[in-house]
Length: 320
Image (tube, rainbow, N blue to C red; front, side):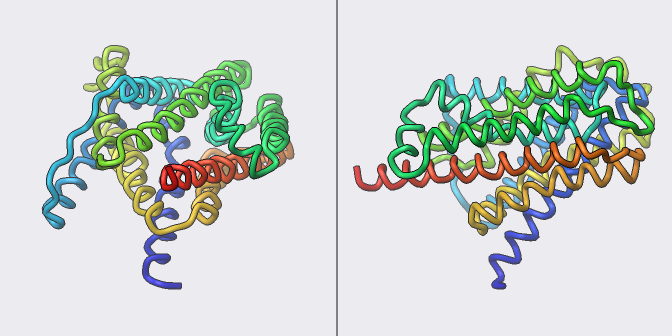
């Protein structure tokens, strides 16, 4: 294993770990009375600050010229999608378990395929010409949908379970996943249209504007009552699960191919299930296990299919 692969795997592993444990921490904070939307806003502000700091250090080391950001309509759609995702993801954790939330979020690549099938038929046409196309997409959607259904009917038992409101939480997480799918599609389209921008710089701007959109809805009057330990955990998930994890994933994507990258990303859900089981005593039922396997398999296949389309796009842009 060469140096680049070591860096790539290490960075991806760091991202997967911090993304994997953050939902459990948020769930505990919410159970202690911290407003979920306040957590979302603070995470984004702190995460944006971390990315900005990394960019300043990077700029000093590389002595690169600052690149302008294109504040197009697409930029604001991406920003709004991220804001909605953060609010609903955190709010959903008030009612459902962290494992469900993260696994439903993992369904996002499948939702991207569904949206592409409905609104970007040229993508499906491209894939149909070279691969199994629509049939494969439908198989992925069916497998992922069965997995999601198993999560919805699962009756989780742990220290913080509120099963009477679980369906509300799962519904919020599903809408959050839909917003995340729009975010994924928007970011890809933005990268395609504006190739000369700095991806991390754009991300820091998206984070800060998403935080501003959330700000009016957060319960800022809670700030004086937040304990030092709660501040510690909010700061930790802001720095590591939002800022550092995103930067590390950006680094990993530079060094690893799509298959190992996707494989490591699936560790996020596994870390969540393990941490929730260890910290909150989650009872891991067969529905959670089978649902997890089906969703992660569908997400894995969906990401590969999306990656294949991006390669086709790249080939066509070179030949045109």
